[in-house]
Length: 248
Image 1 (cartoon, rainbow, N blue to C red):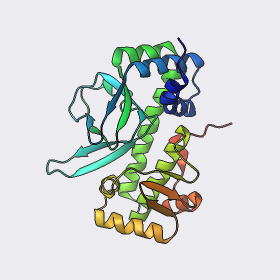
Image 2: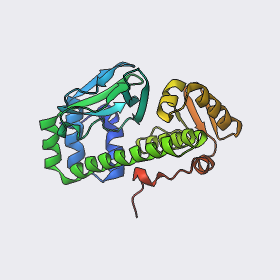
Image 3: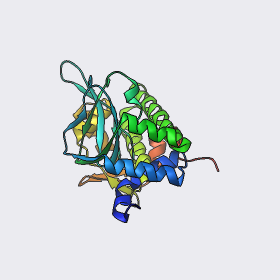
Image 4: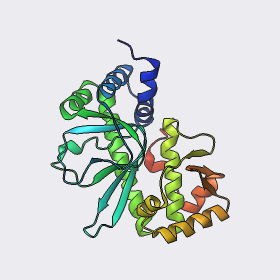
Protein backbone atom coordinates (compact mmCIF):
# COMPACT_ATOMS: atom_id res chain seq x y z
CA UNK A 1 0.00 0.00 0.00
CA UNK A 2 1.52 3.39 -0.98
CA UNK A 3 2.33 5.84 1.76
CA UNK A 4 0.16 8.93 2.08
CA UNK A 5 1.49 12.46 1.61
CA UNK A 6 1.19 13.00 5.38
CA UNK A 7 3.23 9.87 6.10
CA UNK A 8 5.93 10.94 3.65
CA UNK A 9 6.18 14.36 5.29
CA UNK A 10 6.98 12.68 8.62
CA UNK A 11 9.80 10.57 7.22
CA UNK A 12 11.06 13.12 4.69
CA UNK A 13 13.92 14.53 6.84
CA UNK A 14 15.46 11.06 7.14
CA UNK A 15 15.21 10.29 3.43
CA UNK A 16 16.59 13.73 2.52
CA UNK A 17 19.55 13.41 4.85
CA UNK A 18 20.48 9.89 3.76
CA UNK A 19 20.16 10.90 0.10
CA UNK A 20 22.57 13.77 0.77
CA UNK A 21 25.11 11.23 2.00
CA UNK A 22 24.47 8.44 -0.52
CA UNK A 23 21.69 8.32 -3.15
CA UNK A 24 19.06 5.77 -2.14
CA UNK A 25 17.21 3.54 -4.55
CA UNK A 26 13.44 4.01 -4.73
CA UNK A 27 13.00 0.56 -3.22
CA UNK A 28 15.31 1.40 -0.30
CA UNK A 29 13.41 4.61 0.47
CA UNK A 30 10.09 2.75 0.43
CA UNK A 31 11.09 -0.10 2.76
CA UNK A 32 12.81 2.30 5.16
CA UNK A 33 9.77 4.57 5.28
CA UNK A 34 7.51 1.63 6.12
CA UNK A 35 9.87 0.46 8.87
CA UNK A 36 10.07 3.94 10.39
CA UNK A 37 6.30 4.40 10.40
CA UNK A 38 5.78 1.03 12.07
CA UNK A 39 8.20 1.94 14.84
CA UNK A 40 7.13 5.55 15.36
CA UNK A 41 7.14 6.81 18.96
CA UNK A 42 7.02 10.10 20.85
CA UNK A 43 8.85 11.52 23.85
CA UNK A 44 8.51 14.74 25.82
CA UNK A 45 11.27 17.25 26.47
CA UNK A 46 13.81 16.33 29.13
CA UNK A 47 13.53 12.54 28.76
CA UNK A 48 16.43 10.14 28.33
CA UNK A 49 15.78 7.89 25.34
CA UNK A 50 18.70 5.75 26.44
CA UNK A 51 21.19 6.08 29.30
CA UNK A 52 24.87 5.27 29.65
CA UNK A 53 25.24 1.60 30.57
CA UNK A 54 21.95 0.52 28.98
CA UNK A 55 22.00 -2.47 26.60
CA UNK A 56 21.30 -1.60 22.97
CA UNK A 57 18.99 -3.74 20.86
CA UNK A 58 17.43 -1.23 18.46
CA UNK A 59 18.10 1.80 16.26
CA UNK A 60 16.42 5.15 16.93
CA UNK A 61 15.92 7.55 14.02
CA UNK A 62 14.79 11.12 14.73
CA UNK A 63 11.83 12.38 12.70
CA UNK A 64 11.33 15.71 14.51
CA UNK A 65 12.76 17.50 17.53
CA UNK A 66 16.22 18.04 19.01
CA UNK A 67 18.24 15.75 21.27
CA UNK A 68 21.65 15.86 22.91
CA UNK A 69 24.29 13.23 23.51
CA UNK A 70 25.93 13.76 26.89
CA UNK A 71 28.10 12.31 29.61
CA UNK A 72 27.96 13.22 33.28
CA UNK A 73 30.80 13.14 35.79
CA UNK A 74 30.30 11.68 39.26
CA UNK A 75 29.97 15.17 40.74
CA UNK A 76 27.13 16.03 38.33
CA UNK A 77 29.01 18.11 35.78
CA UNK A 78 27.66 17.49 32.27
CA UNK A 79 29.34 17.63 28.89
CA UNK A 80 27.17 17.63 25.77
CA UNK A 81 29.22 15.80 23.16
CA UNK A 82 26.87 16.31 20.21
CA UNK A 83 23.35 17.25 19.20
CA UNK A 84 20.99 14.99 17.24
CA UNK A 85 18.70 16.66 14.72
CA UNK A 86 15.72 15.57 12.60
CA UNK A 87 16.77 13.10 9.93
CA UNK A 88 19.68 11.79 12.00
CA UNK A 89 20.13 8.46 13.75
CA UNK A 90 20.79 8.23 17.47
CA UNK A 91 22.69 4.96 17.35
CA UNK A 92 22.85 3.38 13.88
CA UNK A 93 25.41 0.73 14.75
CA UNK A 94 25.57 0.95 18.56
CA UNK A 95 23.87 -2.44 18.84
CA UNK A 96 27.21 -3.97 17.80
CA UNK A 97 28.50 -2.96 21.24
CA UNK A 98 27.53 -4.37 24.62
CA UNK A 99 26.15 -1.21 26.25
CA UNK A 100 25.82 2.51 25.53
CA UNK A 101 28.83 4.61 26.55
CA UNK A 102 26.79 7.84 26.78
CA UNK A 103 23.22 9.07 27.26
CA UNK A 104 20.82 10.62 24.75
CA UNK A 105 18.23 13.07 26.05
CA UNK A 106 15.42 15.02 24.39
CA UNK A 107 15.79 18.80 24.40
CA UNK A 108 12.33 19.32 22.87
CA UNK A 109 9.33 17.07 22.29
CA UNK A 110 10.53 14.44 19.84
CA UNK A 111 9.02 12.06 17.32
CA UNK A 112 11.31 9.16 16.51
CA UNK A 113 11.25 5.67 15.10
CA UNK A 114 12.64 2.68 16.96
CA UNK A 115 13.63 -0.23 14.72
CA UNK A 116 14.73 -3.48 16.33
CA UNK A 117 18.18 -4.81 15.49
CA UNK A 118 17.01 -7.81 13.45
CA UNK A 119 14.70 -5.66 11.31
CA UNK A 120 17.36 -3.01 10.80
CA UNK A 121 20.00 -5.54 9.77
CA UNK A 122 17.52 -7.04 7.30
CA UNK A 123 16.94 -3.60 5.79
CA UNK A 124 20.66 -3.03 5.32
CA UNK A 125 21.15 -6.48 3.81
CA UNK A 126 18.31 -5.91 1.35
CA UNK A 127 19.79 -2.84 -0.34
CA UNK A 128 23.40 -1.75 -0.77
CA UNK A 129 22.54 1.96 -1.11
CA UNK A 130 20.78 1.89 2.26
CA UNK A 131 23.67 0.11 3.97
CA UNK A 132 26.18 2.59 2.53
CA UNK A 133 24.05 5.58 3.54
CA UNK A 134 23.89 4.49 7.18
CA UNK A 135 27.61 3.70 7.25
CA UNK A 136 28.26 7.16 5.80
CA UNK A 137 26.18 8.65 8.60
CA UNK A 138 28.23 6.78 11.19
CA UNK A 139 31.47 8.06 9.61
CA UNK A 140 30.12 11.61 9.52
CA UNK A 141 29.22 11.38 13.21
CA UNK A 142 32.82 10.37 13.90
CA UNK A 143 34.01 13.39 11.91
CA UNK A 144 31.68 15.66 13.88
CA UNK A 145 33.16 14.35 17.14
CA UNK A 146 36.66 15.19 15.89
CA UNK A 147 35.55 18.75 15.13
CA UNK A 148 34.01 19.05 18.60
CA UNK A 149 37.29 17.83 20.12
CA UNK A 150 39.14 20.58 18.21
CA UNK A 151 36.53 23.05 19.44
CA UNK A 152 37.19 22.19 23.08
CA UNK A 153 40.95 21.86 22.72
CA UNK A 154 42.07 24.61 20.38
CA UNK A 155 39.41 27.14 19.38
CA UNK A 156 38.77 30.34 21.32
CA UNK A 157 35.41 30.90 23.00
CA UNK A 158 34.12 33.01 20.11
CA UNK A 159 35.37 30.48 17.56
CA UNK A 160 33.72 27.62 19.47
CA UNK A 161 30.28 29.22 19.57
CA UNK A 162 30.49 30.52 16.01
CA UNK A 163 31.62 27.08 14.80
CA UNK A 164 28.71 25.39 16.58
CA UNK A 165 26.20 27.79 15.01
CA UNK A 166 27.69 27.20 11.54
CA UNK A 167 27.52 23.44 12.04
CA UNK A 168 23.91 23.55 13.23
CA UNK A 169 22.99 25.61 10.17
CA UNK A 170 24.72 23.21 7.78
CA UNK A 171 23.22 20.10 9.41
CA UNK A 172 19.69 21.50 9.32
CA UNK A 173 19.93 22.67 5.70
CA UNK A 174 19.70 19.25 3.96
CA UNK A 175 16.54 18.33 5.86
CA UNK A 176 14.73 21.57 4.97
CA UNK A 177 14.82 23.23 8.39
CA UNK A 178 16.43 26.51 7.32
CA UNK A 179 14.20 29.45 6.41
CA UNK A 180 16.17 32.12 4.61
CA UNK A 181 19.03 32.88 6.98
CA UNK A 182 17.25 31.65 10.13
CA UNK A 183 16.58 28.41 11.98
CA UNK A 184 15.00 27.43 15.26
CA UNK A 185 17.31 27.35 18.28
CA UNK A 186 15.40 25.56 21.07
CA UNK A 187 18.36 25.29 23.43
CA UNK A 188 19.18 27.11 26.63
CA UNK A 189 22.37 28.98 27.38
CA UNK A 190 23.19 26.18 29.82
CA UNK A 191 22.95 23.69 26.94
CA UNK A 192 25.21 25.84 24.76
CA UNK A 193 27.67 26.21 27.63
CA UNK A 194 27.75 22.44 28.19
CA UNK A 195 28.29 21.89 24.47
CA UNK A 196 31.18 24.36 24.18
CA UNK A 197 32.91 23.73 27.51
CA UNK A 198 32.29 27.28 28.73
CA UNK A 199 30.73 28.64 31.89
CA UNK A 200 27.30 30.18 31.43
CA UNK A 201 28.79 33.60 32.19
CA UNK A 202 31.51 33.16 29.55
CA UNK A 203 28.98 31.81 27.06
CA UNK A 204 26.69 34.80 27.61
CA UNK A 205 29.61 37.19 27.12
CA UNK A 206 30.55 35.41 23.88
CA UNK A 207 27.00 35.61 22.56
CA UNK A 208 26.97 39.32 23.28
CA UNK A 209 30.21 39.70 21.34
CA UNK A 210 28.76 37.85 18.34
CA UNK A 211 25.63 40.00 18.49
CA UNK A 212 27.67 43.19 18.75
CA UNK A 213 29.58 42.33 15.57
CA UNK A 214 26.28 41.84 13.74
CA UNK A 215 27.09 38.25 12.85
CA UNK A 216 24.09 36.71 14.62
CA UNK A 217 20.76 37.54 16.20
CA UNK A 218 19.36 35.15 18.78
CA UNK A 219 15.88 35.86 20.07
CA UNK A 220 12.62 34.00 20.68
CA UNK A 221 14.28 30.62 20.14
CA UNK A 222 15.39 31.62 16.63
CA UNK A 223 18.95 31.96 15.36
CA UNK A 224 19.50 34.38 12.48
CA UNK A 225 22.88 34.52 10.75
CA UNK A 226 23.15 37.76 8.81
CA UNK A 227 26.29 36.75 6.92
CA UNK A 228 27.07 33.03 6.99
CA UNK A 229 30.32 33.50 5.11
CA UNK A 230 31.57 36.04 7.66
CA UNK A 231 30.54 33.77 10.55
CA UNK A 232 32.41 30.86 8.94
CA UNK A 233 35.49 33.07 8.63
CA UNK A 234 35.24 34.02 12.30
CA UNK A 235 34.90 30.34 13.27
CA UNK A 236 37.58 29.04 10.88
CA UNK A 237 34.78 26.81 9.63
CA UNK A 238 34.69 24.44 6.66
CA UNK A 239 31.67 22.14 6.17
CA UNK A 240 33.63 19.47 4.28
CA UNK A 241 33.63 17.09 7.28
CA UNK A 242 29.83 16.82 7.03
CA UNK A 243 30.19 15.20 3.58
CA UNK A 244 26.96 16.81 2.38
CA UNK A 245 28.23 18.16 -0.93
CA UNK A 246 29.07 15.34 -3.31
CA UNK A 247 31.47 15.91 -6.18
CA UNK A 248 29.72 16.52 -9.46
